[in-house]
Image (cartoon, rainbow, N blue to C red; front, top):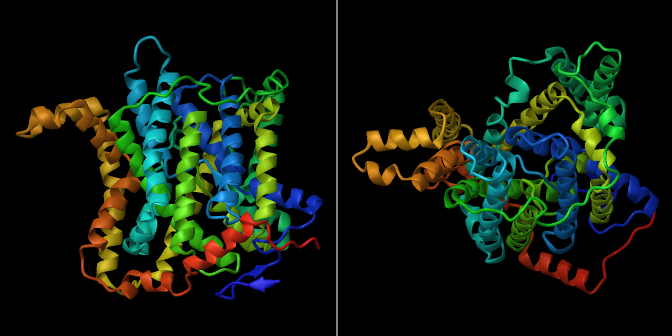
Length: 509
């Protein structure tokens, strides 16, 4: 058993340790269970926004699980080699919803709206992810890191959560608030009040909250309390009628479409994902008993995330990024073994192809998803705010930058929601500016609408510009604290060479 540099965590299994196979299977499944709620929430939200038919949703969800498992294997084996799970990103969700909103409002002829939106989303992710590949493998992350202080990262991550406070699963007028409340209350009880009494509650509060609420909703549906059209209804018959196996393969929805404005908008989500992942790398390193990640390790990690985003676009999902949920599991259990995470990834690939599981997920009612969103998005906000511990909060410059970035990230998207569409924005630009014909062009209007609708992009750009233009010391901005315990590039290179020569240490106790 070891500790990290801060001395506030323990490690039962280190990164290179390999527990026995039976134990690894359980521990690997546990890692995925801590993030399964989020990996379900993203495809369900995207499917709802696209108007995807119910019979297609299980296969769509299953694709997310397959991509998540393959991306995790790639990252832990050839990427940064941290025990970090890859899953559906919240950071790319806002620009994805903006793209979907534009396409579904004016779908092209000859193709159903949901498929047209998904193909445009795939194209935007594939092309924009190529920039992430270049940023990582060309070594730009290490050079950019000194410009991405916590003053920039805090608004970006906070806005990832706040940008989804008005999701229809939460704010719709036709809502079962009792079921929303039950889901939220059970998650809070299990995670905050009962967690110290049981490891089960510590590890699976979100999953347990969903299960409790779903069982109640299913029982009330069977008893006839919830009608078939009522919010909260669970269609159990659809599970038995599901296909046993999903045929998941590349380009399964068709050939992706590429629109420059959507690509530019998705770059904002990619940028937010990079910033979020940099924070995740620091957290997993600290909890795994290692020094802060070197530039070389971060370059490999971001480069691999880019490749897996390209892969996710080809497969037809909403992207892939590092997950904070399983980092928390490492802190709770002390299990930091990459081997355990790889075993869990293999299990997730297998589960993704099982049709019954995907259909079971699709029966989760919107009110339960709404309660899950409140808990999960609030957690993301909290994770972002926790980075303030590195920043000098007595500095008026820091307070100003964080405040104006957060306000801008909330206000600009809200304004564009009131505008209603890129077409309306285009008309407004044409009527309001001397350069109307240029600023009113489709590509400009769509680009401004997609970027402006993405809160973390607006807030991140504002914070990045101000933090790097207003005078401030490295210690004041929080950069000094991040650099105090950083591993040397040679350490990662040496570890990678040992992996290639198959000389990793093994524990079997």
